[in-house]
Image (tube, rainbow, N blue to C red; front, side, top):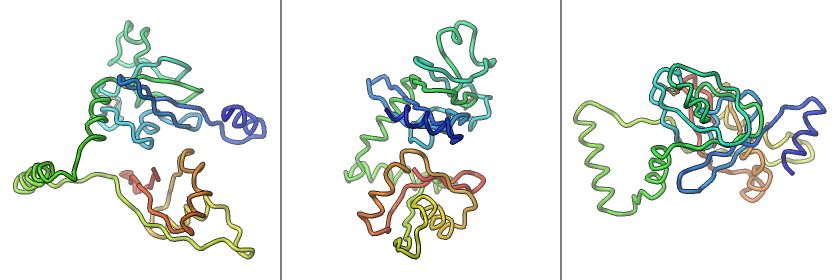
Length: 220
Ligand code: FES
């Protein structure tokens, strides 16, 4: 249903969006939508799906393997994928581009990592103590804990008859003003919610963001 409406938009010259499904060993699926040509590893990142990618997407470590199980991907064969693996559907996420609706299996290591993240209980004093000790040990060793995720409170002007700016534009402008970022990206799953969420919250929202090395903001 959603795909049909997006296809009609395409005939009018709009951006083509495709359904991307990440499948896990647990039987759980995570579904999102991505633009034609988007990088699969980046789609996974903005969707909060953990894929092991120690080289950061440079196609050099060979760790970001996923298995194509339905649909299509533009994904050249690399030295990290044998002929046999390629025939079985294995692809490197970091060199794969979205060309249509697609479903990929995410290997167990990422599935386990994702599950661990989900069940970690930081309301437990014991787990907080373990976390604090690990943090102190790292700091004493001269290392700092750092990640690209963050929480951002965004306040927008409420629309009026004199101010009819579209919600997505209003949101992007407010994020740019708050962060100083020059580029802000709102994934499809965020766009589908903002009209309702903004009006329920009187245009005061808190969002989870990821900042790229270039300073671009991805609203998750
Ligand atoms: S992230 Fe290292 S090869 Fe894809």
